[in-house]
Amino acid sequence: MTRHVTFMTIDDAEHYTPRQRAEIIAAYPAHEREARAKGIPVLGSGRIFPVAEELIACEPFRLPRYWPRLGALDFGWDHPSAAVELAWDTEADVVYISKACRASQQTPAMQALTLKPWGEWLPWAWPRDGRRETLEGAGLALAKQYAAHGLNMLTRHAQFPDGSVSVEAGLMEMLDRMQSGRFKVFSTLLPWFEEFRLYHRKDGQVVKLRDDLMAATRYGVMMLREAVVDPAEFKAARRKAGQSDPLGAFR
Image (cartoon, rainbow, N blue to C red; front, side, top):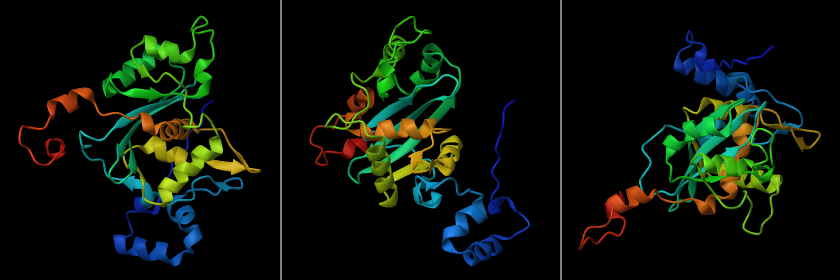
């Protein structure tokens, strides 16, 4: 038996005018607004990212060609595998989650068919368990299976520059970016926001349920230094002779 959760917000109550909705929301205490207006539950000992969605959601837009990008994977089978694309505005140091997908019981070959259109040049961050050998892969490590099917996997699993892999450090990096306006997510990525709303702790520990896109995002943030510009776009946009603006050809 499968379960499905449908979220309805006050914006779905179309018998209210926009002004009436705003007045109703304003009447709630600040700490209750997301729960009452958007149905976002308070779970366990608290949400991992206590940030209003309005602070991180943005309308999709065409990404500048000169922004470095990085893909990030979280492996799974019964629980979904997940993938996100990160685009990095290096001038403002803002990270954008521009693509996201999630699927259960898909082999690396099937997932590669979905992800390769994002760009065969795109480097992919992956978790430490990608070194694990699996029965499905006849003893071949997961990361190597994805590479064999055409994904440009990074040579090392996701880690900080000092080699550490702390989950808490990764979460704090994400939270710091969210709170400082340096982390944005395309508003159309509904599965990403579903996980974001439910991601929480219980007894001080991260609850590892329906956290696949959150985990993939964390791996991407940890390996952001490996993001690159599409080589084809870079070559096509080379600066013309005599052009004074060094970035003019990319704008």
